[in-house]
Length: 232
Image 1 (cartoon, one colour):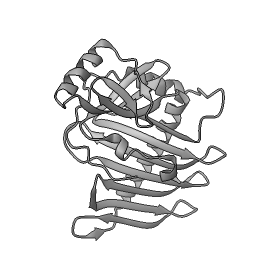
Image 2 (spheres, one colour):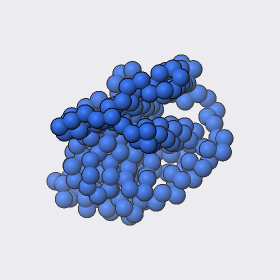
Image 3 (tube, one colour):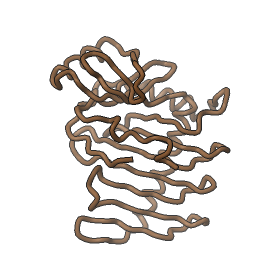
Image 4 (cartoon, one colour):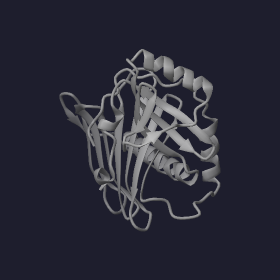
């Protein structure tokens, strides 16, 4: 997966989080698929301060192997790309980067007993160790994101990314798409596209309860969207 820099994007600040919240609650109380979910899935959710997009790959027994979280803050700040890797369902690696900035990041490795075997915070001009509180914070975030990904899959909440070109939406796989968006969102998108020469990248959630736009940006999401091979 290529590192990304979102630049200026325009999240729909009037996005209702009720859809995502209800699906999370539904999934967390025991909803399950009638059949096993695909081993490679994509989903996402709205947090208080930004947008999270998740790509997950499981092994044949549906234990997590790799989970990538792309976090895009609403107002300024870096896009954070965090890669979680697992061995036998246990957290093995946390690697976080700041968009395309290769001079900053965090790497944490864990042994089979869950103890830290390697840790490093890469700054612009130095490498430093993480504190015990930092390590616990990254472990907590890893558990939170994994549990959210389970709930979102249980609710069949799927992330789709694509391109808007003069009113025609095509997914990154080249398939024509027509997200079921409310009138307010459609009007917003048309206005947003007009400011971008009628060409945009879109990311949206598709679920049984409806569709929700997550992001609309001038930059091309399809250029870096993770594929299954990127998570192996």
